[in-house]
Length: 148
Image (cartoon, rainbow, N blue to C red; front, top):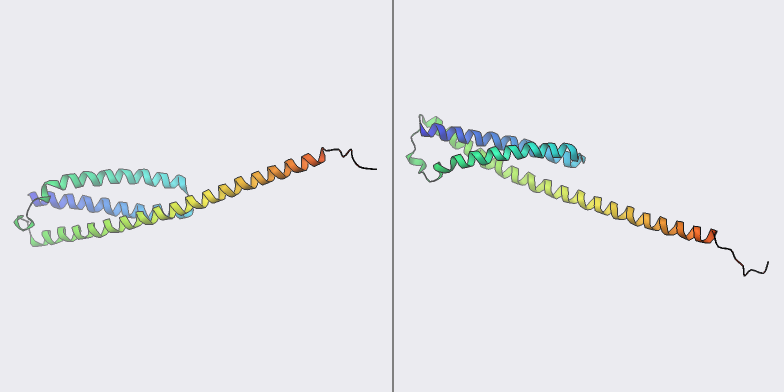
């Protein structure tokens, strides 16, 4: 039955979105902890999940132009369950988008903090270099004009 295929595709989409939401939570934890190595691993897995989600979305394309009222379901419960799962998909997608915005904000803040620390270290190095050069310059000078 065509609606069985639709329900299966929506279930796949739902599973991908749950996985993406969970990885988004882990992603934010790793960003907060500053663990960029583990973060890159999570992002690699996340990319594969996004690819699976795209496949499910493409497979759903033929159903988008259909009138939902004309679909024939095995039972009203099957229809209700599929509709509920689709509503959950929308909520999950909204949560994922929110997570991504939050992660992006935290990453940008960390990047700016790192840039500030690097700039401070660079300025400290320049000051240390200037001070050292100034001290070395004085130590190697011989005052030939003094009266003693």
